[in-house]
Image (cartoon, rainbow, N blue to C red; front, side, top):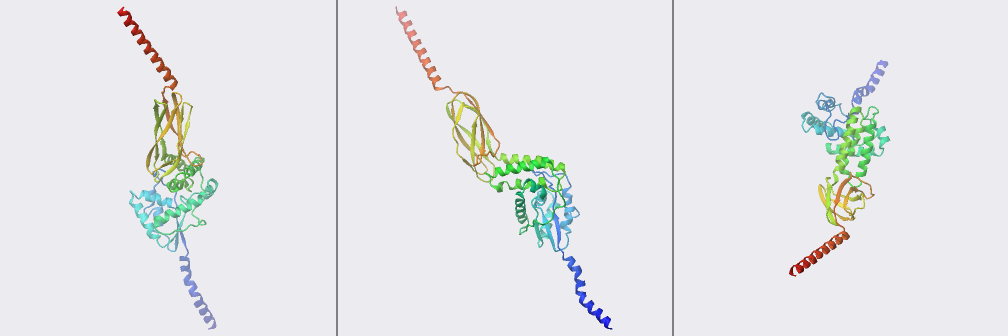
Length: 361
């Protein structure tokens, strides 16, 4: 009887614990990782990789969103993936549904921002250690805009599976483009360069194949060329016929903000002299015309190299070329020619007078 009583008391004491074990396991937090290699190049063209199929309810990304792990759960999101889906959603219903379901299913869950394009951390620390904080901050901002609420940054969270391998072309493209953007940011506001700067992390993304890295490296170079071309000097050919002239030059700013730059001119020889041009401020989305004062020293052909520079004197855009062809008579030659003409004219008059006198005799 006593033994039964002991077992009964023990069972009653352990019963609440036993019944709570399944609930405790159910309450363990589940991480849902939304990270993918880039599906578009820098020009916005999609790679052929079945991305649209993965967004269906039965696809690899669709299962995570339409059939997620039970709550409580935490979402680790890469907004670079969201950007790819939003671009596809312009013409794809499955992408539209995926985005709507993601917002709905994660509404009350915790969301952690993965650094934009989830670059391999070991590569990033070797190539540009100071960029990691930027990728985190940019990622957080993008996700908060998409979800319409706060998200967090957790640098200890694990969103990666292994170590990425990067080709030498991709590493060089990343380094060169990033440094060029840093230089451009000395005159162009950072928000105008954020899209390209953040997307450079795609070159270091985990899961990229070598062929895709090569395609992205080429595409990144084209994107940088387009960005530099937004701030340009229109070159041209000019013919000068007087010793002092002002030639019109067009300066273009295709950015969405005013930009102040220095116009630097280099004359290839001493045939002409160019007057000093002060710093210019170019309105947003504008074409501004300035007039360069030119003094011709000697007739002939010469070349002027024109470029934009920042306050430190560093060139920030491609060099433009002006070809100058001058055919100007110097003052000394003009006086000599005029004097000779006058002498010849007076001699002709004198000869005519002598002829008239002889005819009268």
